[in-house]
Image (cartoon, rainbow, N blue to C red; front, side, top):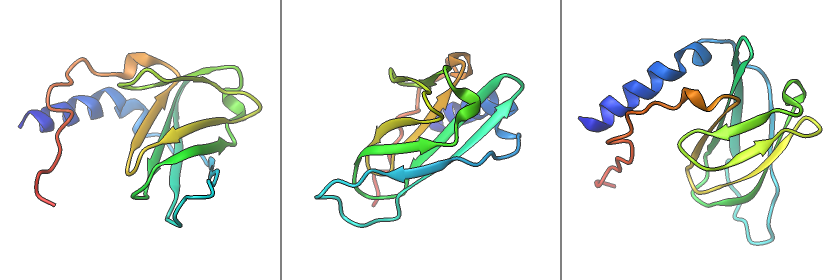
Length: 129
């Protein structure tokens, strides 16, 4: 139940950004010699007035040490804050590079105020696999 409350709180905070139209971003995995082939990483950019939300999803069951996101020219010089994390990246030359764990979802936002304070239950993991 707590995980549902946490999810609802997160969606409520992000609603203004989520209902906006998708903006195209290019996402490319910087391959390592030992990377297994996979689906890759998907991304989309959402905005509401001056605020932006970048959503990245690693579809693979292995990590990627380099994920190159481009077509972010509108954000040049702005800082992207990882919601519910410590990572901060300044957009330079229309792009960023980040790392992603297997099946990880990263939400970067130009304004950290979009984090909800209700995080209890957010770390829910399905024990049945």
